[in-house]
Image: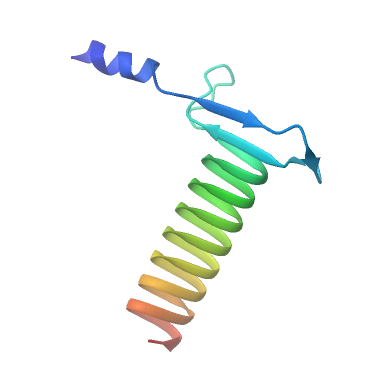
Length: 122
């Protein structure tokens, strides 16, 4: 049984792409999903104007853990965010914390959701 699990770990797909076009020292598009054993990374770390990866940091960030102006992910932080747990200015998520928060549990200046905590609630 353990040989099957080990075989599945070895065949885990890794995706890496980084565009050659640079803006403000960051690549226009950076995609990093899965481990990079050559660099010793357990997860893909993407940093760019548009970043897609296990951990994504950029203007538009999409990933399991994401941080950006527009951020989409399991745990997302930024100005406009969507995620399971979302933090930022305008947020939508299961747990949403921010200025305008919409979600199952919403905490913010203006909050709407199943459990809403804030100055303006609905």
